[in-house]
Amino acid sequence: MVSHTDPVILALRALGENAGTAEDAGHAEICPHCRSELARLAGIVELARGEGVAERLETPPAQVWDRIAAAAGASQSPAVPDGNGAPAPATRGARKRRGSRERWPRGRLATGLAGLAAGLIIGIGGAVGVAQLTTAPAARVVAQIELLPPPASPQFQDATGTAVMRATAGQQLMIVTLHAPRAPGFYEVWLLARDGVSMISLGDLNADQTGTFIIPPGTDLRNYSRIDISLQPFNGSTQHSKTSVVRGSLPVAALGAVTPH
Amino acid sequence: MDGVSDEEVAGAFGDGHPDALALVYERFGPLIYSIALRSLGTRPDAEDVTQQVFVSAWRRRGSFDRHRGTLGGWLVTITRNKVTDTLRERQRHSRVLQVAGGAAVTASEAPSDRLVDRIVLADELAQLPESQRLVMVLAFYSDLTHEQVARVLGLPLGTVKSHIRRGLQRLRSRLEADGVAY
Image (cartoon, rainbow over all chains, first blue to last red):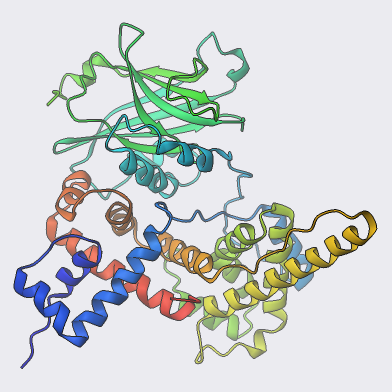
């Protein structure tokens, strides 16, 4: 009676984790069934990871359905939200640039998490959707902040944003949404210190102007309490462009419960 | 799209149910549009192809046999053909321009199988229940181990393991049914 490798261990190994015992690993190499399972799953992982992020699904604009319905003689409207137009062409350039600045070893994580946010915050009122997220009861919302354009940026007077901070055991997530006009460049999220000089880059917003970031462990949020989203030109510089689109402050009272590591 | 499985959508479509086209468009519109957009690069062309795919699929629905393949796979095939047609049309057009003005022509490429597969994968990821989708996204695109994913999301370790195993299997089944190269 052959006992095959536990499917969970195969799945984790396909993801690159060193799961299971040496015996599991050895079996997965010599057993044709387990070897082929592992190869198929690893193929999925490789396909998904390919270019480091998931492909983005885009909803076609509403007029496409109107044209289809007219041509096909259908009338029933699909319950599809209206495609909200063209995303900012920010991500690609930002991604190319990323290799050159490794301020945070978590850069790759931020990239993936930014992709995650595209689906995490579906539709409008992203912050509401996030607050209702039921998957992580332990990841409680610590703060929810409205982001508004600073007086020095009249060109962004119509921009708005939200930042939701969630805390889980040992991790703090910042989920950011922005509503701002498309502009050449890309949007980057920062934590600014009270001295107005020190800052931490959390990463770039996704093309749909959302992003989820892990706050580097040990960050003193009572000092780095201001959130700032900048418009960054594609010039390879890792510095803040000094063009702030929106800003907001974390309520220090809410942070009392969050002790830095 | 809650509560309506791909099989049910395909069933309604095959039966020519009056609402079926709207249902099919709701389920597969983003997949088809995204493949067209990434292959063709321009929104007007992607919109045209999306329109052509659904109109053509509706008119030819009698030839769709859901016992021989999935509706998603059938639509992806139509999309690839329409994309190829559009690229050929572009090439013909640019040859005419070249003859007229001597402008350089850049050869168009057919949609890459791998790109199509990656978009199909993204489409299936998007169908996963939210909790499982987050687990899979973190497992794929963060450097977190499954234990760390469990901590970040506040989920029991067993749930994360089960989400990962079933999630990978589901992606695999979808790619085997609707994918091109996988």
